[in-house]
Image (cartoon, rainbow, N blue to C red; front, side, top):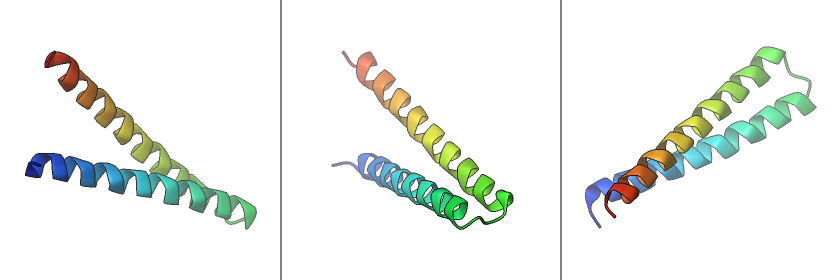
Length: 68
């Protein structure tokens, strides 16, 4: 396994972990009736990490389709 593949796999794992934690924190902040700014911050973090995962998926898919 090349170091690039290892780095990409690690980045994806971190993004998935960040997405799950941000979603959980967003739900907890809503249940505990914390200020809206707290929930919004976790929501934005979840959107950003989800967006980065989508971007990574499309880039990997394009790379795979170009190799065919």
